Image 1 (cartoon, helix red, strand yellow):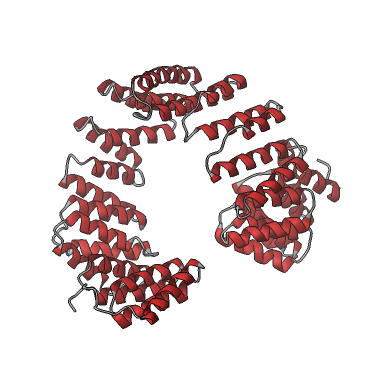
Image 2: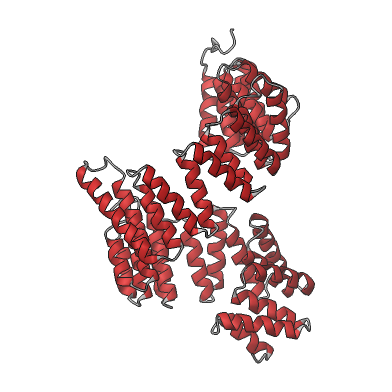
Length: 553
């Protein structure tokens, strides 16, 4: 049989049965046995399609070793199949099996007709590697030993991989090498600017302006520069750049919207509104002049109305904000605009009107249904209508029983009412649906710790939450609290101090203050308590804590 040719195999009842059994197993999410069955069959009959199908099953089951085994069987059956070659290399890289990889990638680049595509494929293979530094070293060797090492695409690939590996100086030097090789390449100039910002921001701006002076049509680079200037709050320079671009391209109406965004960021609300009104006029004319759906005018108008609504909100003109949102009919934005209207009406105290807006919003996807339900629950919760919020969420949970967001919101409301069993049941359902839902582990662990119950289990749950989201200050707070409950005050102060430094919320202040107070650091505790009270004087956690400890603020 020639390489890659399908084998001449009679489809016996035994083979057919095993294929069907594997497919049925996969449909039931029993992926690993399904993958093994397909791979055994591939070895027996020499059909690469079975090996590829087995690979898919192993990947679906998260079994990288099995997937690599399947890829190697596929490659052995079809050694000239480019997809098999790249798949085997990618899975080898992902598995950390990098011996000979640089040489294989170099050979692939050298023999390729399309060098740029081959370099891109090499990057795709190495991007699967968890160790970015090793990935970069392999690419560095593969490219610099290849016959494509002087191509701009090669230098850009090295620049990108160096940046991912944290080698900022090397990323910049490679980007500059790409620009030398292709002096008019905007892609190279953008990398020089982006990576240069991490090395020498002033020089990076100079480099960008030099390229723009030579290539004033470099729209993407100019917008990158504008975005950077805006983030640095250099609004005048950002506006100057956009104005220059608009003079060069007066038909580029998106620049007018960007000018409005910069003006808004600069708190020049009247200027922003004037620019948006011009933009709305232009886009309305475009919409009238073209057939429906022939332009992006509807989406552009939706963006403008959204920003106008935000401006009116900032100015306290809430009815005007609602009126702007009411103009949005773009399908992709309409439902979100209605929810925003509802939240504004709720801010005005018109709770029932807010709920009516949500009920009439007409969600078109499951995601929009969930957003509407959770928004209504938030409005009712903030209005202290907890039972009404629970009632809505219970109906939604029955209608969409596998929706994590609904179960989690419902669990938090039950927790607020002290219905511990319902809280725990729902949080465990969330964890069963989404094993990476850090906040469910945290909420369940904190609920146990706060009640001083099943503390070892609480610690285990919060530890898992912290593994998933190690920088979350609220999870750090929970960890500090469970450590305190378990008598480890030193660790408690450490976690709570870190949490408070990240997010000086009043609840965290109450916890940190209590541990410091009990530890005898009363001046520091009093300072933390007072900071929390200044921010949120009626916070129930803080009030209960200082009352219980007998602290006078």
